[in-house]
Length: 397
Ligand SMILES: CC(C)(COP(=O)(O)OP(=O)(O)OC[C@H]1O[C@@H](n2cnc3c(N)ncnc32)[C@H](O)[C@@H]1OP(=O)(O)O)[C@@H](O)C(=O)NCCC(=O)NCCS
Image 1 (cartoon, rainbow, N blue to C red):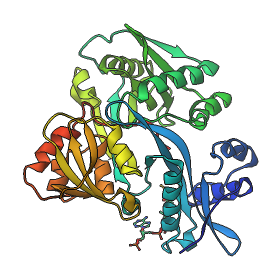
Image 2 (tube, rainbow, N blue to C red):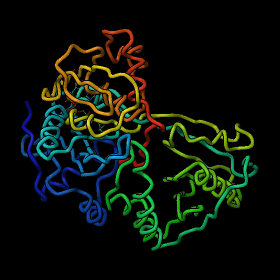
Image 3 (tube, protein in one colour):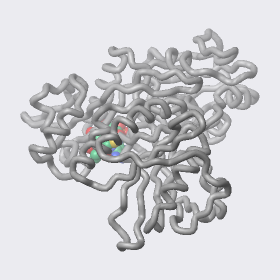
């Protein structure tokens, strides 16, 4: 088993370069490293060395994830995972994943979360797809909206962008299951550095009846001509559909803009219902967003709220963290360990797929992710796991 160690500050640049190479990105310049080094949370980067050189690395940063009902749980956000190309498939990632999970247990973080480069990597470590997004492209010129957009949209400029959007994001993102708090480094990359480099950012804020209730951050795509440009929405969070509609209407209505693309937008963002012609919105793709790992199943289950209806007994299996193994009785607003045979059974990755409300237990049972011992149990579980809104995060890391 490869030996994993926690990297000291003097090893972080090697880790950064190793990760960049693993995803086919350039190495860092001194100036870039100065900024990137500040994005590493102290003591949260692990690595594996071989022959005096680092051959594998993974890091994490602390965040909080909103779960159904509004609680926000401490989460280890795993990122920058890479193994040197000549040392893959020898268990390096497996050893680092185990070490990271042990650390999350030690720190008392009930959840871990990541974004996956490939969908076949992380299920074996207990991560399941807990939220998804879709890529959309909305016509600019000519896109009409069924209702006159409500409220006001204003642009925020330069040094005002970061503080304005930071405050709004934190207030809006945790309203939806799957939303996370952002670290300062995220804003530095998305806003502060582009502003310093004089790049063109379109930062728009919507004001509704109760004040500022949504924002969008868009950038021009390099394609197009002087009079035919396309924008890409990097960020758009809104309190409700009115604010969402007003922000999209604003972006698509900007002069010289033919098209506005959105990437990993919420699956239930109702653009087609808001547009006068639903075909002004094309869905160009879709992908998994949050890969969630329930590190402490009893704490995670107790933290979310549950729908009404008769209880169900769910058996959970966790190969890497066997303390989570057991049967949980969910119902009456709570989830507790039970000393009864399970009516449904699943591995911890498949539990994560239902936990935030993304997939109904009956669908997971029908597709073989959950096993059924009582034919009436999937419908009961559906009622209990159901949420008002689909989960979505909106922060890629
Ligand atoms: C993905 C990556 C980290 C895996 O590291 P690794 O050290 O090769 O992984 P392991 O040897 O521990 O593999 C563990 C298991 O996962 C499987 N696996 C690992 N990567 C896989 C992949 N990309 N596709 C399918 N299976 C994969 C292995 O075959 C192995 O299966 P087994 O237990 O049945 O033998 C490494 O290939 C890499 O750096 N890839 C490029 C960068 C990247 O995608 N990073 C992830 C960013 S989210």
